[in-house]
Length: 327
Image (cartoon, rainbow, N blue to C red; front, top):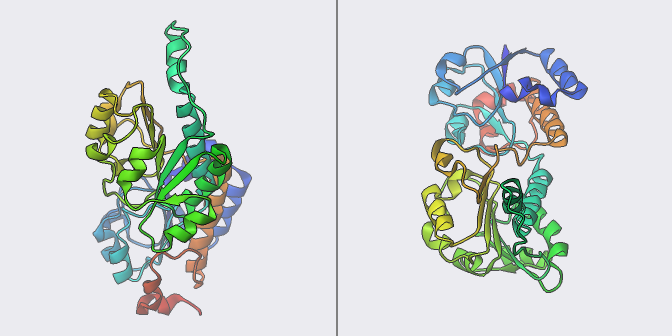
């Protein structure tokens, strides 16, 4: 039996004794095989588990994966996993929500950097322009959070003190308890995204999925000095629209935690569009937690135990899964 390992396990920047120990324990149960690229039918033979990155998992992988028990996502994004097909095939899908605080810290850091115009000041200074420019304070400003799950709440708990009593924290979410939940963070729940974009000095997106939510129409409602921060998924924002809106001075900064390639290649060298390499949730500490969680999830599935953070709970009643679970 094989366990396929995400390429992150080959990254020397995150080599630790703990990682070696986790993999050593897993190797006692199955052969460990690093993989790259998308998971296709040809890679499924003899595979009992996968610690998966964000690459696409094809339907054929499930169809040919006769021994496959678990796909443990090294992170929380599952758009490329095809959860429905995994459930039909009797394959457990888990996520590893070990980096909420990490992403929240990234969000706060980018929020402060945009308020202080750090990126613009750095560019000006390196170009020989030593101008003093307008910057802003968090205290008394308005921060809008689109999406108020675990990460949104972690951001709110950090931002509330920085905003001060006179600052406003606006949140938008479709969850039915949003008003009560927002009140716990001294935040105001707004009824529609338009209010969030229109009234905030910075908007941060904390939503799963690939559906575009930041359109040109919404971007045009923003204040000219405002920033849009997207530590979630690049596809949440219409890249053509935000590039145009920045050029038209509709908003000042766009920060996205995705590299300048693919649909975001048009942002290359734009001084007020900041792209990071999907690194918001990756630190030395969060990587160690992700390693521990995902290797443990795969180990549990191989040993017939229910792993933590099962995304597709319905799969636990699948005959195939009930066959290898011990209780």
